Length: 74
Image 1: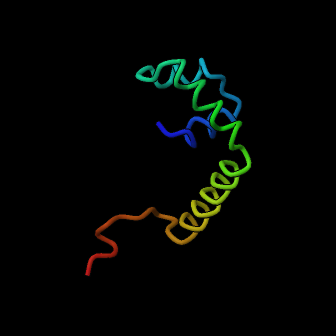
Image 2: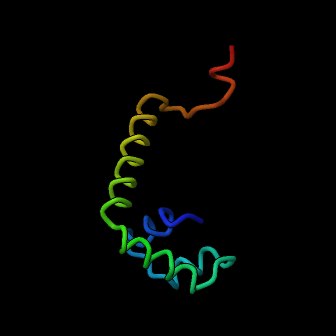
């Protein structure tokens, strides 16, 4: 689980304990550490997440039925 993934869930309103419920292999201290890192680097991580969202939207528009490796094999 990346800091970005934890930050994205937190931005959607999930508390650290809720993230831990969904991903019990994590431990609460590491979730809080990821959130601390997120808040220390908020501007950059928010920009990264926005760029990821834009790319996701572009790919969804380009491949509305999804993408598979077989589609682009020569």
